[in-house]
Length: 209
Length: 209
DNA sequence: GCCGGTTTTTACTCTCGATGAAATTCTGTC
DNA sequence: GACAGAATTTCATCGAGAGTAAAAACCGGC
Figure 1: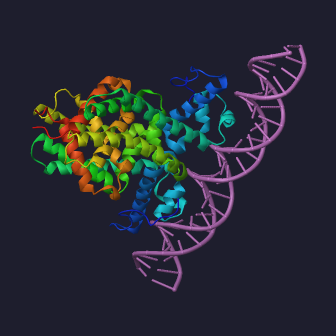
Figure 2: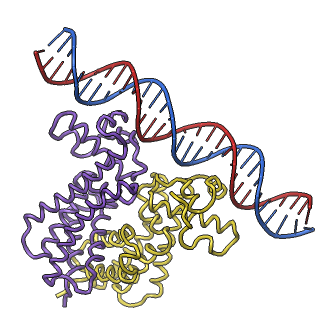
């Protein structure tokens, strides 16, 4: 992979130089992970993106897997935090809160660097041990959503005929998959969010007659 | 990857022994592709699943990439064929036809071996040259869906406020992502299909008051 | 039970990429 | 302006996995 200028926020942030390099490496790992998958993520590529020599990575991480695991974990944590923060400020009906979560999830996924995307799209390829450690975090995140759906359902705002568990996964799928095709050329982020919100809410909403 | 009994239809089918071995290899490739991604697909693993020695693969394919490309192409072609067949028999409103397509797409993705899933989930990781060749086929497939949405829209059955292109991708995402989490333990295939149909159609449907 | 073609195997090469180790350059401190 | 530690590099090792080559096993006629 040809060395490219290095994506997003890198190097710019606060902290010691060392801390910034470290962040650059993790960001680069996420960047490569999203495009090449777990097995395809070569340290040499990560290094090129982060603008260091490959062995330098070992100053910060003791193995390739450790780096990858951190990149993935950071992504999920970030998504979760942003969604929780957004929800904390949201009042309104349960369906409104769902709308807020949809927006937060999408904007994290599509703009906040490649971390969230790496976390979400790479997981299935991770070796089992790593995946197991990740699973709990994943479950926790889905739990937030499950809660939202449950509230909405309790409030009678959700179609009774839908299996809430399945419906939730279908909805999350719709959101997650956007990372697969969206780029700013395909329409504005706001446009996607609006479309997704409408689709999700109308899809879930209790019968409309 | 420990040699496992070999998935689905393999070896069973019609044709000369040679043809059956070949099919087994392609099926095995799809099987591994789905779980490990493009870079993670080792011929030794494919061979183990197909129950041959790794070099035997070279009797049928001249390179690893050629094998992978075929596995992916077969998957997409299969999905397309099944959806087209299902649509050919479907009458009813445009939204009904969409429902039919949703069912066909999902059942291909979730049951007809790993091919379709490999085709859909692996593509983004493929090296550019291979991907380019695949892109056209992919576009053709999406075109079918675009047509369905357009018809429904023309018939006034779809919410005018939705951007049809974006909405379609969101819908396809919801369907494609199911391959990421579904297994028979999570509910019946029919259950998923029903939920997805409802969600998709209600999500797209023209305003309901 | 022998033969030419087909299919599969065993034994071997070659390259790439993770990682290790030592050498080198920075950086701030006195 | 020399020193201790931090950060990073260059050089070297090593195993894994793609691909090759030649030998072996299999298979349907005869």
